[in-house]
Image 1 (cartoon, rainbow, N blue to C red):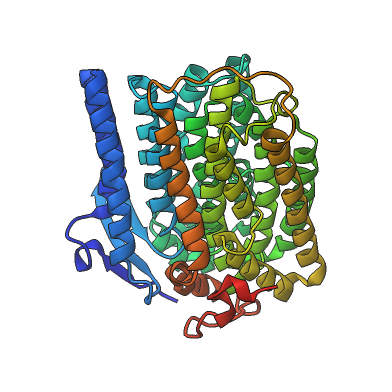
Image 2 (spheres, rainbow, N blue to C red):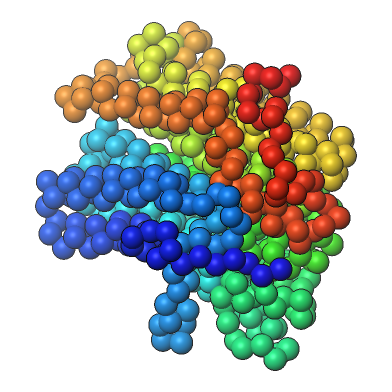
Length: 523
């Protein structure tokens, strides 16, 4: 079925996706050129605030009632096609990136890095790269943005990380990423050249690849290459080894944006695997689901064993990734809607936990659980941020993850049966266990040692309250009013399900179940 394509000029007054991509990159050029501390603060906050406002504008003008690619931009440049667009699969990730970037920049005011031109430039560059990747509708263009991501990740880890072994660790991380990028590039090349051998013009344009993939050769090989590369990026067990290392050695401000970037792997599977190689995806679904199940329990059990809160959160992400992958390979509308909404909820909630962990580190100079305790009375704001974010990660009622998990479980039951669904729920119970245990050890248990006094000369208390209020309002607000967010993704999730007619759960013209409107109605 042909995809409807709507140009940006039909809806917006300017090419909003390209503007959102290049505003942070332009800010980097200005900051790097003048190297003024005052200018760095003004330009960086102006750029991120403008992008947040553009993200809101993007949500307002997006037509959620019509499936297809909206706000499309296409430019021919040196025999290459630059194409961007937005639909239900990426509409929520772009504003999320803008919001978390602004919060990360605000967080640097607490750590007194707001005047650090190099650090701020990397954060802004990272924002532009992620928005460019999420909006790309050209496989080679998407790959180039993903490769550019190595630059800010490497620099921020080495330059601003807190670990003692970060220079040695970054080389091991790059081995994972470079090999994953090589697999992804090979898959994209085989995809394009495979269609060219069947008489189609050589192209990396996603719309053209989707339209002509019926004549594709080597579909299974392409699937394995792409899935391997995206699995490293998610990360999915057993391709996850780099994440605990970078979580322990890196900086909190960059890690918050990085966690949103982790969802790029989930998005890539939905964008480039499900529509382009549907036959191979269906063929290998059983194998992928087994990896997801292993990842859920592996990540949860390893998280329970951690004494470093940053490594604990890394293994929590690995556990959650297993759940999301199972939802993707359920091939039906409910599960895909649940995966997309849950990815956004996890991204924001985990960023909230990371900010709280960073604030704890600023006070205690440690991330080790046995050295913490008794912080609730003196740091109630941080405790509330950690608790609300943890409850959202545990998909508790009143949080956006609850309705998303409900949809994912319903789709999983329909495709894989009760055993897999119960396994996901048990994994979520384990997640609740290690997160609540971490909360108890950090904030409730008796302190093991006296904590260093924390200076308020830079008004960190006010700033941390701003971060707490914003994240908690977003989580609770979207939790109680989930239906508007589901409408953004419903039409295009149904369109993806049309590639797998034997697995579809409902049609696009059917309303979302009433039980989703009110999380309090669910058991």
